[in-house]
Image 1: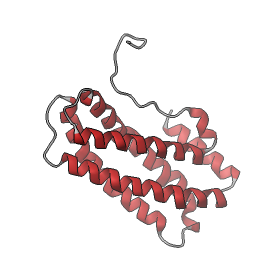
Image 2: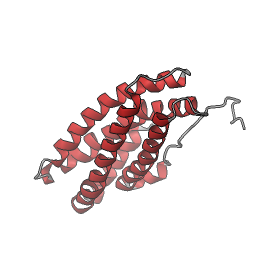
Image 3: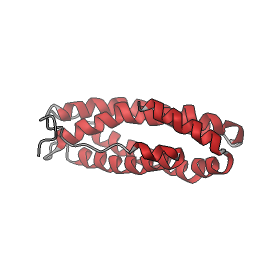
Image 4: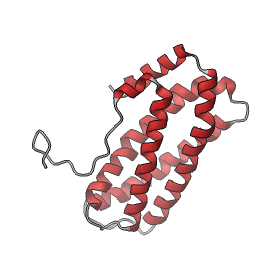
Amino acid sequence: MVPPGGRRRGAEFGVLGPELLTDPLAFLSAEHLRQGALLAHLERLARHPQARGARALAAALMEWLAVELPRHMADEERSLHARLEPYDTEGLLLRLREDHVDEREAAKALIADLRAIAAHHSPGPGFAALARRFASGFRAHLATEEAEVTPLARRVLSAEILTQIAAELAARRA
């Protein structure tokens, strides 16, 4: 089926609805769940880069890694973590920011391979291993955020601060 406008868009992973932004912590948690599904697709593509639908899947994953993931990291670093710094006595937020640096670098390499797959070419020889490492590390990162950062934020951030965070997240998506 061709969508309105007459252009087939290939594999897509719908973005979360703006109504979730009324609770920015729930929004970020929902994004984490969605990212877990995207990681599973990345691993599947790494196993079968020439499978049926691989080109569209690669294009959708490129969009996630190039656009959505950096925006999500900005949400966390600039809006959430910045307000949690005074409550972080163990350096957790610094470790998560360091993870983000590594994840950004890995994403650049993955995007190059995904671009090749989207163009119906073979990825580089290290693509499968890189995709597995990225997925494994990113899942651990997400688990830490859900187990430690989100509960901390729920305990210490006021409704007023959460409203400010929600506005910042919405502005990044405008």
